[in-house]
Length: 454
Image (spheres, rainbow, N blue to C red):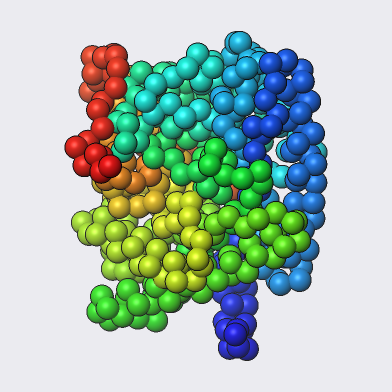
């Protein structure tokens, strides 16, 4: 039972510590929309989404009003479009028509993002999957709500280096296609290793083929809550520190569980998972970097940063799994530079570099996220950074991702503005030594030896 003290405590977290439900994401299977006729495919997709999600936004708003819990975003994820469009889409341009249909459906039901313009190519690529990947720059440039992802590696299959090379080119092309908006298209494109099927957070959300016809996944976030809790144990030992993080993560996750259950019941759609990730925003006091600094770092990036982040991530997971039977998605700590004021400040102070961020991704929930780099950075260098991050995920049996933004026309010292939750970011320097000969090799990096567990 929830007592009055817990109700009061939760209200305080919402009002003063930036606790929110970051997203209710409705996953919709489009497998029953598959058709060899492109017009029919687009018609079925539009009708399926608008019918299934017609009450999503209003239900979310009702829950906000009744419980006083902010629900920042209402979103949709769909079956990877490379699979759905394979029978009808013969060219990249055909896939762009599907992107526009998804965008139109998202606008109709009132969600802010729709994810699943995706391809899963960790071992090899079909022609359909290659066509979708090649369509991404145009699709992101000509839509408002589409989010795209490509899974290019896994612990079981290794890393598809042909896809890595292509994705470096696609990131660069997406930057060029949206250069008037500080290359905003790249902020909606994620390259994954070990992508989860049930992630509710954008831009990497898609509905895996193992999922049902529709599912409700909720992402909850409370960096500010964790920081406030840690302020009360300054100078204490690691045992008290860890216990405080666990207890706080438990409370935050219970809020997500409540919202997920209510949304599931009211929409008549099964509940999937709660993702308990600490996802920051540009708002002051809503920062993962500030949590790490509260733990004892002068600035994020200082020696000890990776150890502090590893501890934080682990304790968040331990607390969260006790609060819900179905914790999933990514669940841990995000470290996106542009979306976290503390990270931005650390870059300005010179304590946080791309190389340190890469080390931190070994122990966090995602990877190199929302990092602005010079627009002159070559596609091969971008592919090399992607390959490094995919290797971390593959070897460590975890999800890693890359969301790099080569901002066309800007260089180190400049600032890129993305707006809203995407925030703003200083352009970070990139190692300028080349890796073209490595990236140009064809084929696949084999799976690590510990992948053979059958």
